[in-house]
Amino acid sequence: MPASPHFSPAFFKFLRDLKKHNDRAWFQDNRDRYVRDIEAPMLAFIADVGERLPKISRHLIADPRRSGGSMYRIYRDTRFSADKTPYKTWAAAHFRLRTPAKDQPGPGFYLHVGPGERFGGGGIYHPDMPTLTRIRQHIVANPKRWTAVLKSGMEIGGDSLSRAPAGFDPAHKFIVDLRRKDFYTGDEYTDKEITSASFIDTYVDTCERTAPLMEFLSAALGLKW
Image (cartoon, rainbow, N blue to C red):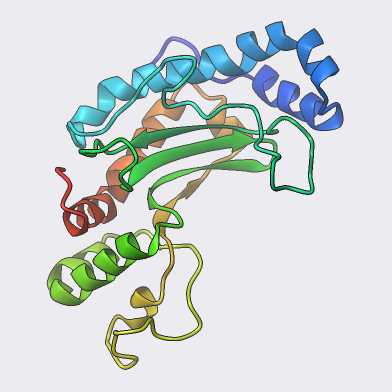
C-alpha cells in the first residue's frame, strides 16, 4: 500500500473547475494545477499499477509517459462534434494488451475518473466488425470456456443488437451474448475510494476479477495472455 493516496480531492476540484471554465485561456492560466493535480498523480498511478499487472498477465502495457503512453490526452477531438469545448472533464488510463501491430484491436483494462464518473474494469469497447465476428465465433466454438467467464461473477455491459447477427443462430443458448457489440465489465467507485491510499489495491482487485473475460477475448483474437 502506498504511503499516501495517488488521487486527492484537488483532482476532482480541478475537473469541476474545468467543467465550469472549459476554454483555452482558463486552462493555460491553470496548467500548473493540471500538471500537479491531474497529470502527475495519474502517471504515478500508471507506473505503480504497472508493477502489479505482470501477476495478471505479462503482456499488459502500463506506460507512464506524459504523451503517447497509457494516460488519455486531456484534449478533445472536436472535428466532428457539435460540442466544441476543447478539454475533457475527466481523466483516464488504458492498460492495453500487447498486440503484434500497434493499431490491431485488442482488449485492455481501463480506469475513468471524474466528478460523478468513477469506474474501472476491462474488456473491449466498440470493436470493428471483423474483431466482433471473431469474438462471437469463439463463443460458439468454446461454450464451456464462455460459461466459465459468465460464472466468474462480473456482469458484462455495453451495447447490443436488437436481433441475432448475420450468420448466427437466433435460438443459440448464448444469443444474448452473441448480440453484444461490446464486451466489458468492471466496478464503480466512490470519491472516498478513489482518494484512499488503498485505491490501487481496489483497482487491481477489479482487474483480477475481470481477467477471465480478458483472457477469453485474448484467445478469440489470437493474442498472448
